[in-house]
Length: 86
Image (cartoon, rainbow, N blue to C red; front, side, top):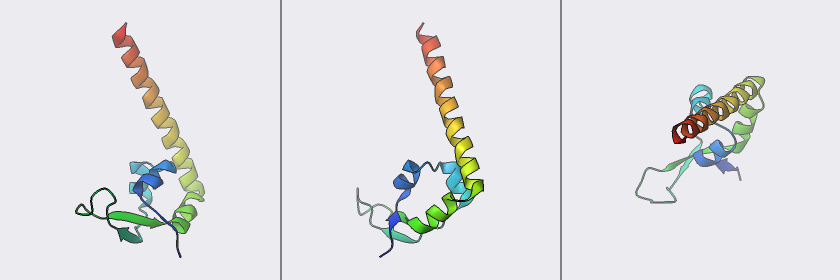
């Protein structure tokens, strides 16, 4: 049986919305939404395909930059909030 992950798990692996858009992994299956089955089904991604994308140097470089950028923007937001409170 294949292992699948959902979008939330993909994000926990360090994927950003931009990385998902740029590398365009096609979902391999769908499942009922665990919160409310009446909502749109959740997309599931084959874990082996995701690992193959993650192993490429292009992905690794882009992920490193995306993680740096997110950290940088969070730090700027923290500094702005701190400046407003003083």
